Image (cartoon, rainbow, N blue to C red; front, side, top):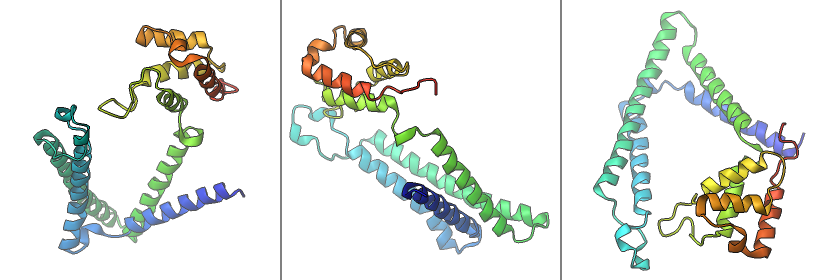
Length: 233
């Protein structure tokens, strides 16, 4: 069996076993401080991570000062959003405790032996099914064609927009990437004329003059490698 296949099976087995083991723990019957931590810790972490993410955003008022693009205090709306996310986590934790107790009591009332064992097995089964579903829906290599095209366009940056910097979205070229990915979906590599047409649609100018012959040829070659051999498969 290939190493990658063994690693995949091991990962699925460990994840399923861990989920089953956690599902067998009667969380709703744990000591009050533990239950409080079960509810509060995820909420605190979620709020903290959200606040840090807000601090990492550039300050729109500091556009004229490049040195001011570091961490900044979050605004009142950003703080409110972070606290709301923490509140949602508290609600989810409380609901989880009630659901855990309700499921155990439901099985006990119906005379099911070892209800925690069955809850754990059900938790593991759901976890395994979810992991397998994610694998089936994920594209080979873990990256879609559109994402790969977007990475190429971002690297070339024909419009000199510097995606991901100075407030420019990282997916600035997403519409163009989607259009080119659709061309690749036909199974044939796009031509320079087709790329020029896409660029004229969004930027009112062809792509070829922006990149020049060398960069255009390099982009076409990279896109050619992304074209599926059998688009109908």
